[in-house]
Image (cartoon, rainbow, N blue to C red; front, top):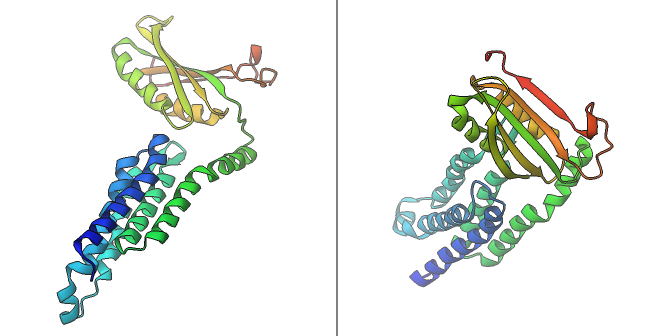
Length: 261
């Protein structure tokens, strides 16, 4: 018969292994990081212990199936996973984070039953999948999309009305703050048109992928206060000679809001 100290060890194992998985997510600034994964794993351990030992008397007298409580862990994780999956333009973000939460729950359930070796192996597998497989996935994406792995500097500029400057600055920061982007500066200046302000953001990406900028243009061009949105490649090593239809090897894209004068 397992005692309270063994139960505490199972909970601690679930919490610790979940934290190990969460460290990688926290380091990459994902929505569900260190605390979330640790809590998911610890909660799974608690539910497994509850289903195994919390209804021991009922199990022997009424034919209670304790595994039903543990089975509901999967349903509960589904709600958490749905909370971190978001559609961002044409992209879907958070699928890997949701899958990691699901695996953290499984690791916690294993720790709750005392299967420490399997739980540790599961933790190693999850961390390895999130770290070692990442370069391979990027290589495949680059080959399929024809993108470049060279760091690229962009200038993202939005022209809006003066009263909405603060709101548009917030939208610009939100649009370019995403994995793979590093925001360097945000500035505002008076535009050529009266009553207009130009909000400019300089950012660096890990690899050149103009589609990410196009998504930001599409979102911001729908704002009523925005009259024009543009992006420009400021610097792309080894790509200065690429023909983009503009002088000095720069690519530029403008989008105007038809509902704003």
